[in-house]
Length: 123
Figure 1 (cartoon, helix red, strand yellow):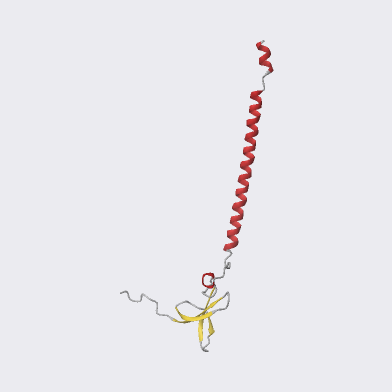
Figure 2 (cartoon, one colour):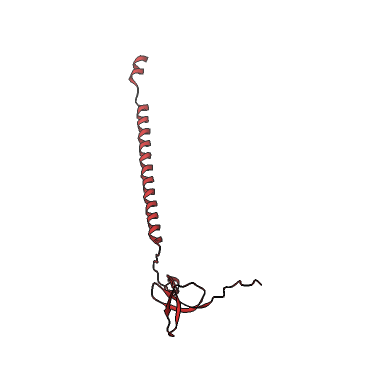
C-alpha cells in the first residue's frame, strides 16, 4: 500500500449554505480562511458554499433557478439570438423564393407572348 496516500489534516469544519444560512459541522480537509463559533462554544474553520442538501432542489423538492455565474442569462441570450437568426434565415429564404417565382412567371409570360416581327416576316 502507498504511504501518505490520504491527507492527514482532517479536522472539524463548519459548512455554511449562503442561500439559507444552514450550517453543519463535519470533518473535512477543506481550506478555510474564516472561523466561526459553533453551538458548543468552540471556534471552527468556516467554509461557505452555494448549495447544500438544505437548498438543493433535488433534496428540498422545490424548483428554483440558482444562477451564480449568470449561466441562465447567457443561455437565454444565446437561445434568443439563435431564434432571431433562424427567423432572419427564414425571411431571407421566403424572399428568395418569391423572387425566383417572379422570375419564372416573367419568363413564362415572355415565352407565351408571340413575337410580332417573326409572324410578319413569315407572311
